[in-house]
Each structure stands twice: as C-alpha cells, then as structure tokens.
Length: 80
Image (tube, rainbow, N blue to C red; front, top):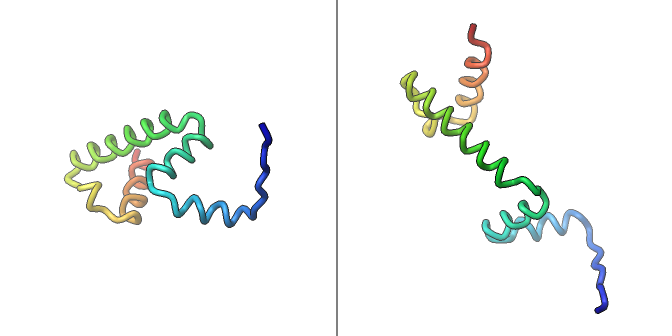
C-alpha cells in the first residue's frame, strides 16, 4: 500500500476544519485531545455547579453575559 503525504499551510487546514459540521469538528477534537470526554464531563459538572450556586443567590447563570459571569466568579473566588 502506498502512502501519500499531503503538504498544506496550517491556516488552510484550520479553515477546512472550521467548515466541518459540529459532529465532524468534535471528532477532530477527540482525535487531537485523547481525554476530551473527561474534560467535557468536568466542564459540564462545573457549569452545573455554577448554575446551582447562582440559583441559591437569586441569579440566573444562563441569562448572564460572559462579562457578568466572569465578574461573578471573580467575586466568588475572593469571598472571605
């Protein structure tokens, strides 16, 4: 079996990956990041914990802007 090597600029490869469907991009990530499933599970857990803590404080995580979320987390980290 002959092997073909394709050479292309990295920017073109990135552009091609960005054109893929979300499922195909996820498959690329899984190939590049061996423990992606564990990372995603941890990220999901963290997001759920943030929602729970916000809800106890009368806040709605899902309706907060990214800036509001960052400020809230910063405040949370610096609480006594």
